[in-house]
Length: 398
Image (cartoon, rainbow, N blue to C red; front, side, top):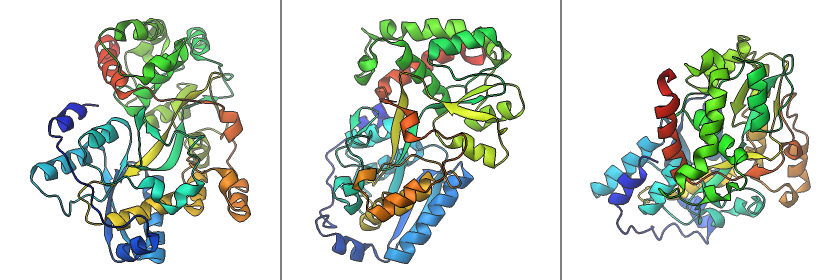
């Protein structure tokens, strides 16, 4: 978002290294042996950090690759680092070998030709990825074109306390319920990721044809398209927790409000989050999950390799392992992460499929069938403007 213009301003033709030879996977793994891969990834979750540590153990065991997790609070920091290296002419062995990336940060790096590749569709485990049924070939509407590799699926769900409410079919029903139960709902304050996700989900559900959000927002269409969202929020805000004069800062802070009995409803981008939180005594065991009848927004988490990585072979080995049935099943286990899989179950061997079938998703986790249809992420330009407008209209308790 904020880095699109900055990175584009410095864009210049950047070559992708000819080596390693992606058509010879054995040669890639031989080259990867002994390499150290610095994976810049969000470090704000103990369970995610533990999973990345396990991935490191496995790629060392099988391929001799050392994985170092560089913990980020903001992915844009990694984008800035690669950009700075390019400006300084450090084109051969940059500090970053792989980035957990999505949306505007990927768009910025792709536009500025700061990425190695294309590589993803030539990885061996791409053969079992559900490239047709899951949103793994676009990233917030931007074509991936092999420049990043998927490793997890996310979808918007709503966590609710069954002791106090029933599932709601759409955003209009949530407004009606909130009017009848003032103070029992809130969402994280934008620009927190979950807060902006709530705004996106509301707009997608309120529009008669959300397809308009798949193209860039313009001065000509922005006001008309977003008008239903502002009308909705004008009605919703006074009914929120603390009458919309304050918001939880993060998703975990939102969960704490449910645990403390202050609210009954919360948004999540992880279908397994409620189950994991119940298991960790962070939520009461009366909490369950629902999705809207018209579907909810979903996206994939990706990894990308900077153009100047000195360990591109090792990074591809890690990316390929992340798509393996072994890693995907572990990530889907609600006792580990509870993430959705990027794999096509019909493409797996009988033994690999059996591992997924045997997973106990947990009492508050919806099955893939129950999650229903997935709505596409809007183009990043919509949220840049919506987040700014939200701050003007509703920020700081206005």
